[in-house]
Length: 166
Image (cartoon, rainbow, N blue to C red; front, side, top):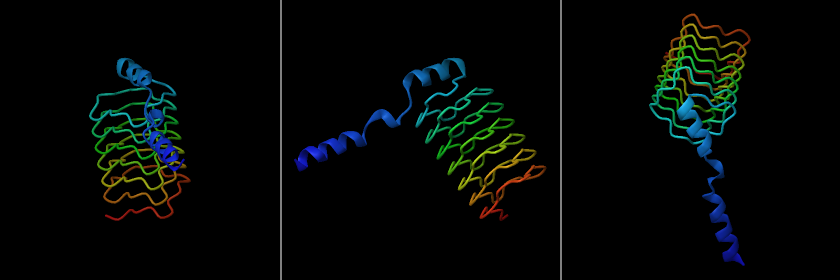
């Protein structure tokens, strides 16, 4: 009986249920658009996805390191723990996006709209946020050291515990 329980737990631990849906990934790669898609843990590293439409899509734990998402619409997207290091998100819409614990180090978010986004615990070290709209964002415990905050709007932003050291 103990052996059967151990085997069952092993099967659930490697279940593909926690990964992206192949049909959603194919749709996104062929059309640059995938609204409410499941792209969890997808490898989209260094891809060219300018003006992509990923509204309300689930990209948790995905790898978008070095990708070009300039002008993309990621409104309401789930980007928790997503690797966005060195990603170009210039002019992107990240309104109400979940960026909790996302890695945005050295990314370009110039002119992006992150209104009402949740970026608690996000790594935003050395990020270009020039002219970005961060109204009503939650930056609790986010690391923003060395980030360019010139012209940033932070109306009603939650900044408790955020690191702004230079």
